Every structure is written in structure tokens, then in C-alpha cells.
Image (cartoon, rainbow, N blue to C red; front, side, top):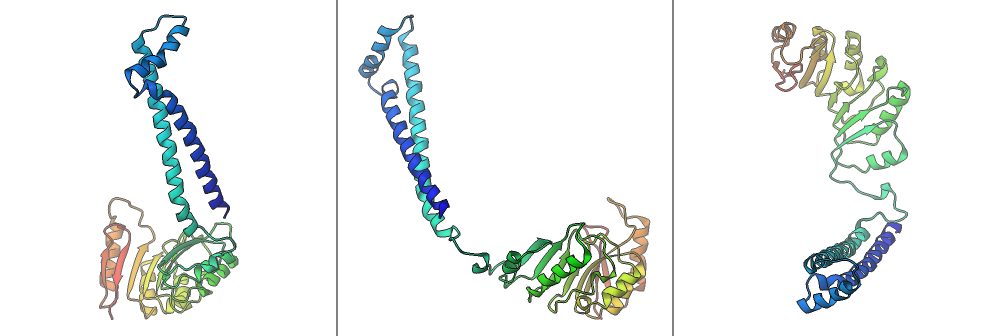
Length: 292
């Protein structure tokens, strides 16, 4: 309400400025757009008062400049008045009504959301209104305790019943409890590339036993050893695709001999029915399709 009142005050203020500009232009118009007789009458008193010699042409140019300036200023003020008058009905229609909370609003078309912990009640009220939300990207501060981060993320997951993709971004290294506590029966895609951590053999075992991984169909992950990816493929029965990066792939603009060896090793050790391909954009990522 205060916003709308302020808009009306702005409109009235602009209107009074427009009146002042028009009054000034009416005085200066004789030097700009009046007849020759009017201009001479306008300039003659100044000629009599002048204590120094000045050409008539110079004085006329000066009066024309003043008139043009006043006319442009008046046009600007008129635009302010018209613009604010046209916008006020729009603000009245879309401005937040006093007393309305975010829980009163609907967001039917949002399907992806990025959040940074910690959360609050307002965020939860917002999240549970996102009926079509299927992708959640979550990050946390480096100094947030693991237990707090896990509890808050689980609270968010509890409010998103239709979530299909969970992506971790800027998530500091944590202990092996990182995957086990998270429960959500609808998630089918997990992206751990944002973890500041490379999954070891023990990590992969813990991940494969977690409730999230049991239903996972698409997995993005960074592993320390070649055999880790084999373990995940063989134990996560619902996997259909994996995007993996191997520890030590440090080159930037070309594939190292080690990376070529990794490709060759995968081709000869993956179960039959699997196919692989290097990502054309992120050359250190290998895409694996699983069909068995």
C-alpha cells in the first residue's frame, strides 16, 4: 500500500513540475518560435538595459536556446506524468497485498530450484507449493556442521514429493554418513560432481547401500579407481546411465595417455550391453549407457 501511495505522490509531484516547466517555456517561447515582431519586442528592453554592445543575432540565438531547453524539459516532465499514471494501475494489480505471505502464492510452472543452506520456514513454505518441481540443486557453506546440513536437506526433501533429480553443488567433504540419511522415494537421478570429494571404494559401498542409490537410474560421480565404477554398475541394479570422472584426469585441452588407457580398460571390463563415450564438452567425463 505504501508503494502505491508513493507512486501517486510521484505522479502529483511530476505534474506540478510540468506546470512550472510549461510556465517557463511560455516565457521563453518568444525567443524560440514567435514572430519577428514578438522577438524584437522581447529583445528590445534588454537592448536598452544592456551596458555593452551585443549583436541582435547573438541575442536571438540565446533566446532560442532558452526556449528549446524549456520545451524539452516540459516534454520530459510530461513523460514522467504519463508514465507514472499508466504504471500505477499495473502496480495496484501485481503489488503484494499487505498481510499476504508466500504461502498464499502459487508457482505451478517452476520445475527446477537452486538453494543454499541453511533453510527457514519461508523457504519450506515456498518449496511445498512447487507442484512440478523435479530438479533440486543444493549447496552449503563450508562451516556448516555435517549433522545440521544433512538434517536440513532431509527436511527439504520431505517437502518435495515429486522430486526426480538431486544435484549437489559446492558441497564440502564429509564423512561416510553423507548418503545414508537422505530419504526420498521419487529421486531417480543423483549428481555428486559438485562434491569436493572423490569417492573411494568404501564410499561407493556406502553409496550403493543408501536408500537414494537403490532407486537411482542416472548417476554422476567422481571416483578414485577404475574398479569403483564397476562396483557401482554391478551393485546399483536400477542404473541405466553413469557419467563418471576418474581421479587424476588433470589435463585441460587434450586427453592424456592415462585417460585413453581408462577408456580402453572400460571397453574391455564393463559388462556386456554397456557402451561408453567421452563427453565432447567436458572431456574428462565418460558417459556409460547400461542395457542388461
